[in-house]
Image 1: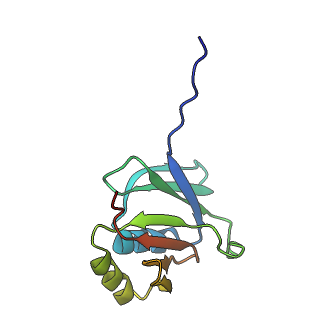
Image 2 (image 1 turned 120 degrees about the vertical axis):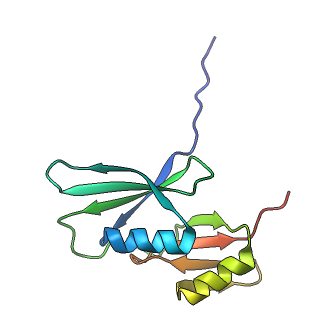
Length: 128
């Protein structure tokens, strides 16, 4: 009998220049909390995994000690998406944080931008 390969989402990675600034942003903007951390013995890198407290999916923030220049994000055609339970409240929160970078009212979505320039899509609850 052939065994089926089973895969599940685990994490997504963003490389960041200022780890503390990024941790603060993700906590304030999206309520993400640190769930685990790995650090190099020589201090050359830190990996921090953030979770939403509801799913097992995490966002890995990678900080490299020797990296000083901004990351090249290309044309920002990739993004991470979050579903907002209360879309209107989320929109007001992000508007007050001044982190909305693009709105698409026709699709009913908007994007926020993190300290390193990564775009994050905010969508209303998906109704089936």
